[in-house]
Image (cartoon, rainbow, N blue to C red):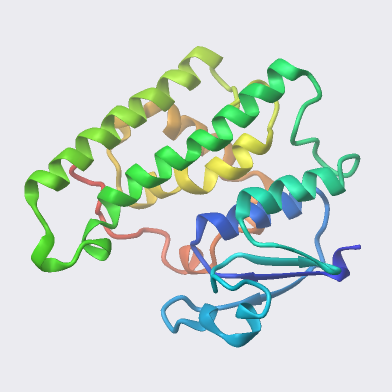
Length: 226
């Protein structure tokens, strides 16, 4: 079944990483894949554009089905292979609601992290303001407190949506992994850091760990002064 799949991906991209984690959790190892360099703009190639007019990664194809948005691809994999591998979406409506809630809240954490960690990448030099970066940092600190509170409420050793590993963890872990990599002070999010330590050696996560992170485990210290 996996041989009929093709994933175009880039190293260190949270959207790519979450799809790769989902594939591992659903026991779909052996899928075809093509690594493309963001630095060389290889994701803008015609091969990708033919499947994804946005020319973005991940681009995922299963037979004649093309799903490019990472959340959509992850949910598709769970739906198509529900009885295979890890059950990532529970049947209980209340449990399911919390999984979806945390999944989509991940967008807030990702956006606020990017606005601090990659501020100089996204904002042209002439438009950068210390006051804007300060506001971004304050917003990220508040967001981290929120997520730490979620984990505190769930209890020690819990996943993001309960006692079981779910799709919430699949989509959010690749974002959380940036905080230790970019030297975020542990005291800013102690529960998230514990969660990271608990999950970083999970087989699906280790198998899909970004190659350039393996070569260079520490990234720039853009979150050091948070």
